[in-house]
Image (cartoon, rainbow, N blue to C red; front, side, top):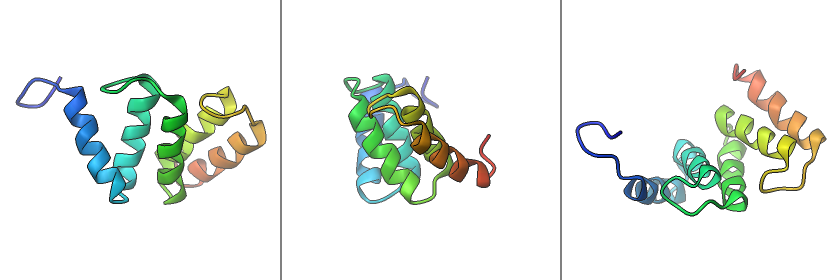
Amino acid sequence: KGKGMEANHKEAVMWYLKSAEQGNSRAQNCLGGCYRKGIGVERDTKEAVKWYLLSAQQGNSKAQGNLANCYRDGVGVTQDLKEAVRWCRMSAVQGNP
């Protein structure tokens, strides 16, 4: 549900994309979530990983955790538990459970 208006997931994705393309790590992480879950866009787990990675590389702990989950579960990438642990540790160091 939107705040003060009806939720429009496609429009939200449009704004996330504009911000993500300018390097905003929070928007990149949110965009990754939209692609992973198919919210406002067609579900595309490889595209989700792309945006999670861009955000995680900037130090976004939530994106690092999301990327760890993708590697753990083999979502959008080949399952790689070592890579999952690496990203999980980076996220945990910043206090992300």
